[in-house]
Image (cartoon, rainbow, N blue to C red; front, top):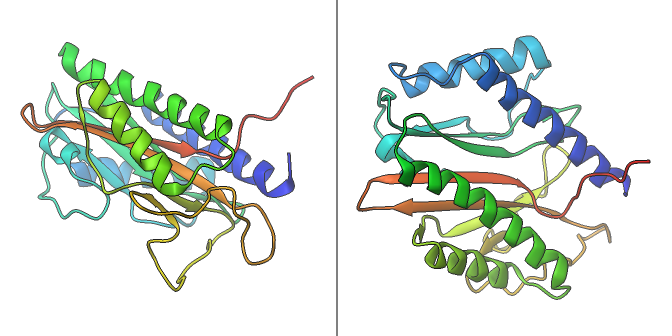
Length: 231
């Protein structure tokens, strides 16, 4: 594994540990405002994981707000007992960005639990498609994961399905800001190197929604890096 990939993986592992601690500490609870949970996770990241920077806004969505993506403006709401809650955080560890998203179904509703399960499965299918398709473009991957949503009985909830990730701050202000996102019609090869000849690394985001039920789920992590070999 190259040094950049190794550093990104290490940052992601720390983000995963942070999310696990959120669950272990029982922070995701009905009755809290989304902003209250956001603040609690921020404080946990700072006090127990040493996080001093987040490279993007910290996002907590619950209930009908889970239909909305990162850039959408939503009204603050209080988490309910039968909600899906999704978290999207970008903590910076040792100057390396993590971007990690997970969803949690709080109540017994089987449709909500299926949605949470399906987005994890779709992520693995998208990552496998990337591994198996050397000439895959950003647009090709977007169309693939949109198709996964439809086949599972959901709708894909966003115009993008991922973006670059790297050393803080990552590659910014390109001539075409849409070039470095996973979106329909983008012909950029996901394996095209950056301007210095280094491999670019990407995040894959899965956002499935059911507008009739007013629910959505979100899952994201590294697309281009696998767990280091052991032994």
